[in-house]
Length: 371
Image (cartoon, helix red, strand yellow):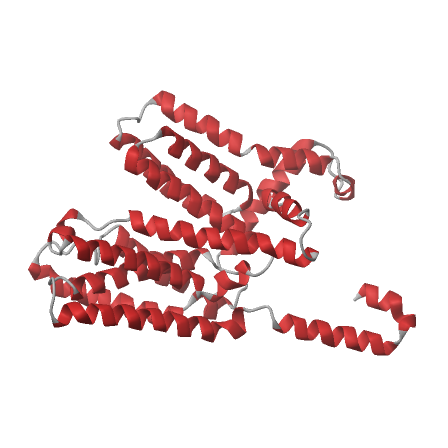
């Protein structure tokens, strides 16, 4: 009784008359994941450094480090095992993650120019995502606060605007009511002994609540929060590695960034505190890796800006070496994660099962259908 919008998208992709059914269905995950990487890149490009930090480094260095931060964040997400898993399979998390990033991307675009269409679109996309992605409920306070802040900046924080956005959000929630109506007409409505439409809606919302509670791993939930949310808050709320207001505070900032960089290395290489190592994909945690990728990119941008603060010289040239080392490291990390994240071993088991069943003889058709 969940993932209605994703189910409709799967049906749409399944209708494409190209290749076998499995390829068409899995294609949705690949398209959504590619879009997520693109959206994360552009979100990172819009999370600029503070004016104080920019004044301490040349303009070209600031732009270069911002671009490098976006590239590193994208690579960190691309090479994460959970993201790779949902990107290569028919999994709803790929579609849900795209909606999450798209809504914040549109909200940041509104923050650039104040165009009403962007905040309307962000609200609509977020509401549509609420139909499927229970994690969006956890991000809801952040989305609302950011939207209110941007409305205040552009002097649009008025009652009429708030009611307009609420109306748009209600439109985005319509798919859930449509899905409930379709369910009420299906055979499952009688199987579950429902008596009216309201029961269907209640159980849909109940299932959403259960998904929210189960999305937090029973073992290691505190560790997952500490290694993903806390560093993100430190970087983007407190501004560690993005402000550096005075020379006296540089040493403390550099030490904190060194610790965060070391933590990033442990997480991305699937060390003991990485979400993947803690949960082993049960449940599949992709959203924490988005936060990890963002603050990892910010750290990479900080180190490049620090190395290239001077226009030229040894430290400036070392910055280019740092870029090359990071890119090669992510290439090696992707190669290392292939065996775990790829679904190719499933083909071996499939061929083994086919061969085993074929050797049973043609008379075992019913058994082959059952398996």
